[in-house]
Length: 400
Ligand code: PLP
Image (cartoon, rainbow, N blue to C red; front, side):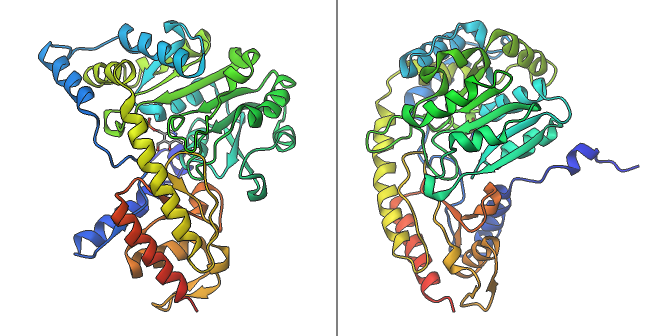
């Protein structure tokens, strides 16, 4: 009898972690490696937030809290939803978990029966298909065309819906493309969803505050309040407040689903860290100006990276509206041979050779269910980014 359960054999380890691990190993060997593969801000958590955690420890806020999070934090989350998007969630409709990732996991485990389908527009975040599979659901990956700006179109959604569809995932701004949806972009999708009342919507808004050139990402419930009764609006502090390690994510969702997620969480992790929760209250209710400073920095880096990548021979890169990723097309670089003599048949061959030969770590598009592309994270200091882009240009120039 095998030790590992069948359900674990159905999923794969995160490809982004595989690349980051290889990059770290090369670094340990003394190689000069620039990592553009991580999905986290390079900023430190603002001091007022860190101080709130220290205060919480000093005051003895070190015990179990309600499974769904402290009343203070749920109230702060409700207020943020209201201020940021005009969403009206009561504290009973809010649950706080160990990162947005646990919210996704809880929602899928709490709702999917074997064979239920979840529509996932691609390119997509690496974890959605695996979490759905782990919950015994069926990921239905819908490739979104580059000519449509990688945005899901109403007719593509309509065609993907079946009687077994339980969920539609939408991630805006998107990891890995950085593409975001405006209210006008969401409207036709809302109209399709109104015609299919059995479909629930999981909107992953984790990058919502990281948007550029004044673009304002919209979220389903503000565009179409009639979808509120079947939508999970997910957000968290990881990206907007540079708090990836604190592990705080949250959602607003109808009470029935929130209760189900609470039940599951109560028999797995219970509440997330009480100290991190106290810090998150400060993040959500304290000064917000840090975010604009961070956004301005990201925007400058995005512009530099897009411009330098578009000067790399064979690469084509659009200007995304948000997050901290660009997703250039590398198809014209494939089928060639690297300076080190490697045949680059696939995007994975390309990023592997780029890492081994030029010391730049990026993630291949196939990891995001979209071959022929690669993801570059620009959550790295500007000098390293410039050096990395120069290396990418040199690598592309020398392909034969
Ligand atoms: N959703 C997307 C699209 C992400 O990129 C990430 C993290 O990389 C998450 C959710 C989860 O974030 P966390 O669990 O840190 O809140």
